[in-house]
Image (cartoon, rainbow, N blue to C red; front, side, top):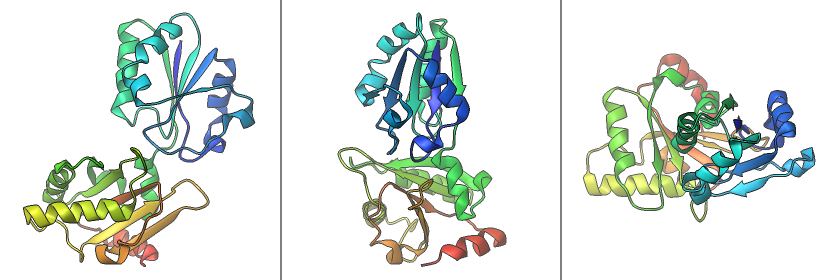
Length: 239
């Protein structure tokens, strides 16, 4: 039996009661540690876990699935277990092998951003801004702007977490090269830091006013056309 368990946004207190009941019954618990920063300390809950990185999750999933054929195995994932395509691939492989799978959902960054006042149904495709140079985030921004959709940018965690300052500067760098007028220092922007924690912060303003924000983990939102109710609510976070 394989369980894909959402860990929530911040720490062990975000685990659901259902998730805790399942984890206590498992023969092995693996904690995925690369798609998001999660501050949970499972020893506080008397749970023994093994932390796994990208390679073990993407290339070594076969070993985990072999264990799940005979034992109860859980993969604990920051946020919701099916937000990242990697975890969906594990689910797909498990089904192909005839392994029973149970999904335990939880909050993710893709729902938490509604706290900004921006309506979730108005978000377009999501892009990650990586340390490795790529113009894909800019291309995706263009697609979303064409339909007046909001754009959520996830920031690379890589060797170190990318800050909002670094993410915005990357977009400005691409704009300077492409010159398609998708973003400039006057562009309206929303930055969310540490959502789900007591330290959460949300900033709303022009890009030039948010270029000094270095708190992590964080996401960047470049809004599309704002409904009057969105404009009013997000205005509470104006810097």
